Image (cartoon, rainbow, N blue to C red; front, side, top):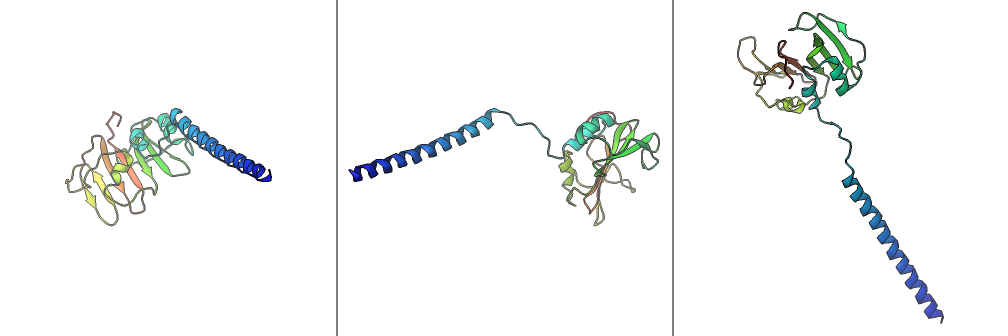
Length: 179
């Protein structure tokens, strides 16, 4: 009788343990299936947003990288743009934007890129051989000072990459299309 009682307890405990394991698997499986049917929020974690921001208004830039650290300020530090240039920074100075008539024409990203001639593709631009490469910079541009080395990206005036990982992208002043 005692033997039968212990056998029933062991059988009951075994069945209980097996059913509990199946319940966990079913719960885990249904959780896995439910995540497949509910679409996850689309978050752009790549740097391709940079290409999409070029030639956009300051309002559109805010949609990509958030509110500016400060308001737009007039500046004369716009190398090739020269007139009607305003600037501001975003994300505590990580991004520095220069606008010509409120359109983003020069964009600086601080310290994010490997010092490599393939880094240009990390911002969504097609690969192009650098116009100039040294230990101090990699530069893609329409023309060097000696008028050699075209860049093969329509609308881009130049891209400059420094060894500390900072990249500056300049859009042609009169280019009015989106990238």
